[in-house]
Amino acid sequence: MSGSNNFADICMCEIERIFTYNNTAMLSFSVHYPKVTLYHNPIAQNNINHKIQTQVNRFYHYASNELYQLAISDYKNSIENGFPFRQYDATMQYTVTYNRDNLLSLYSDRYTYTGGAHGNTVRASDTWSLMSGQEILLKQFFPNVPDYRAFLIDIITRQADKRMQENPGIFFENYQELISQYFNEDQFYLTHLGIDIYYQQYEIAPYSTGIVIFTIPYVQK
Image (cartoon, one colour):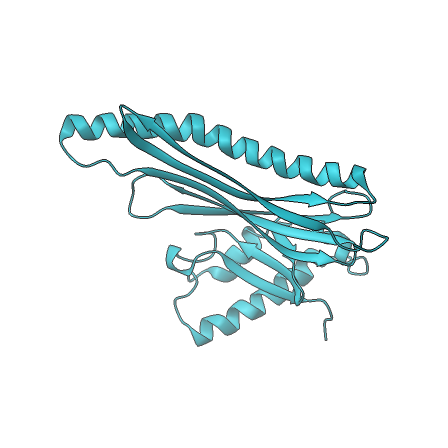
């Protein structure tokens, strides 16, 4: 580790549990999350770890209460009507995408399956300064672009146009309108290639397309 917090030491932690009812597995729960160590900046370290731990705790509370009770209700209904019960699933997986230059960026995918045709994934992301431990907003990466929102939507739309030409049907027909409508300044993370801005499932594309990601290069030509 260098003398400054140029990057963070990260170890991955794991929580796994099976929730049962009447000797039957109702819900499988698992979380893989990072624990950050900043040897020379314990305040920033604690701020980052507290935010991550809060997210994990909220997901556990949601799974162990709301999802678990829903699974029990579904199980009882299955027994009464004589059809098989499909075990529920709740997983949360963190991915670190950038960890250098005094910046830490990551996202978490929260997947839940409640017995339907397929599960659902929701992505969330955070970017921190390793110097202060404070979260960095998307607009802070564009200090010289007054209308950075319009600037980014224009780049994203042009990328989407190209993808649509190459693969018709990958997005909804009104994807250009939806790109602007569902643009969310919280939905971004850093990579070595640029800033990834993403759209959740169903926002601009069908389920088969999944979470849609657009990369904004750091150097715009």
